[in-house]
Image 1 (spheres, one colour):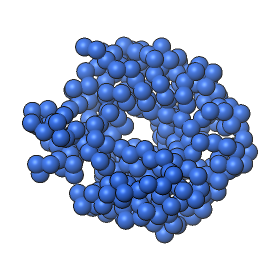
Image 2 (cartoon, one colour):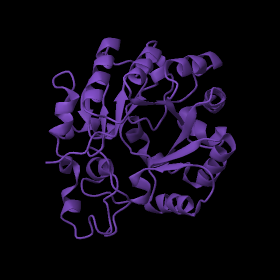
Image 3 (cartoon, one colour):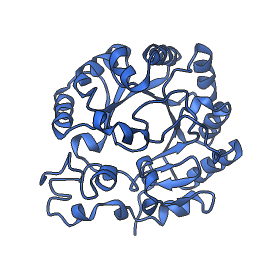
Length: 314
């Protein structure tokens, strides 16, 4: 089996978080007792370099809660990995932004924003969070960082996609668009947040029509493209478990391995990405011709068949 190199590896260095977002897929808040030490995190970075990974995305929880975050980012940078970090930006003072720049000059930063106004954003993240995130994001932009707004589409915010594009334009950021997956804390709010097929189509059409300056990164669960889970992407969870994508943390049958037991290179290159393709899709005549099957997490965890928001036969 020929295997593509790992392109985008997420690494959940903590589940500790200063927010309690209602859509959180990993139920972040408290620190996990299984959180890896600085030395263990650096060992994982060495393993990713050895496996020829392209980009390491540091996620949480909130990565900035860890006091050793600067050391971790600096270590990855010195090892030649393209480093990225996802943050709610609420802890990014001017000093923090400066320290991040010194630690990892080429760091790409994703800032989670769930709406263009406090009213929308705070329905998901809680009171007072919008202003903190905007302030933090401006501190990052003023320090010269390449910033992408991370927008997760749900039933409450889908109709603000135009406003999110305008906001990204005004700030000079990129825009990443993903779809809410009802797992973790999000499972308990799925009736409020889970988007319909029509709502996802609305977002997809707006993004297709867009011809402005904002660089877009759009997940396969919006346009129905190819899911990269397990193929070019994987997530390393807080305890070292490797999964095809973070949403698969709830499904041990999809675990790829654990970096405390085997090196990442061995885990990656011995894994067959077909394992995660739903049977209903792999045996469908449309698969790989006019349909790429959409989001595998939705297929397995929500529908136990195919991604119904994407499927052309449903």
